[in-house]
Length: 428
Image 1 (cartoon, helix red, strand yellow):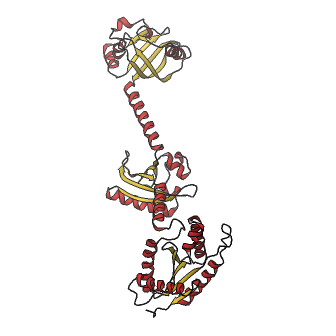
Image 2 (cartoon, rainbow, N blue to C red):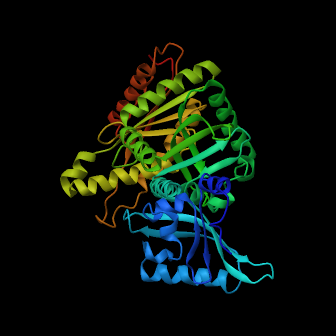
Image 3 (cartoon, rainbow, N blue to C red):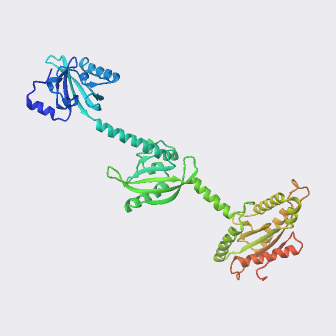
């Protein structure tokens, strides 16, 4: 069957449909081609194309030509109707064009196959744009999946629309099990509600928000994030938020370590003098506010310089650490112990009266005297002197209380050392 005898109106219609329309005989020779096909083949007239094959005009790689012939045989010999994507190199222009082609058999009145009808839409530009978008998406996914941030999109219905691999790993769920699910299905209810209240405020205000957040990952480890959340309207019109939460756990831990180092004595691990004074002032105010006693104990290792001179500073450091361990062994969780000087220490005892503080000091004195240090230096023994006092109504600040305890300490040292001296609040 052929179409060259169509009346001109039909020919005009086929020329204007915006698709490549053609028919061939059983040998694949053109019996009709509309104007788009003629232009594609090189601007020939219809009469110059009739009776010739596609391969006479278009240069095809061997593999492509073989696939095309196999497709045509399925239509012409087997009677199949096929729809598929095809690529052709146009000899006249040197362009590689991509088409979506539908091929179906033409039959005579008896139902015998007489040829083939082909309708092709040029999707070269569409294909190029799709490839470009796919490449851009692959690039963006690669970037987002390899960043140290949890990246997600959550819509106004609390459903995740996007999740990157770090978020997938944090939740221990594949991305496909995150996208489409509500936050309450993936997070504890209280945490999901907290985040959702924040998301609603961002959507309502239209303003981005930054904050530090802490979450437990799938292994139960506490992770810290710096989050930037911005409002966004999705292509389907739904309001949403885009979240980028950068993992700052290592930075957070480093910050805590630096703070710890700034407030601790590096040798003993106890609080240092500056940190002790700051906490003591706060505890003093708390004790006054609640009308509770507050005791202070000052301590000094007896003849410590002689230990250093006789046995060296490494042994002196060992003694200091052993003394600090003794102090910590008698403390409650509310007590605070600090190394305030070379061999000088303090202990702050909240909610403790003078008698109770004196008993703790005596217990500690006995523990220090019993320390076995002869593993490194045979026969080495140490002792310590103690001064104990209470917060007095007339103390303007912690300095007054410390001065009274320090005086009691020096009284202990003048009294022969290795003893405890109590300083009542009316001793001034």
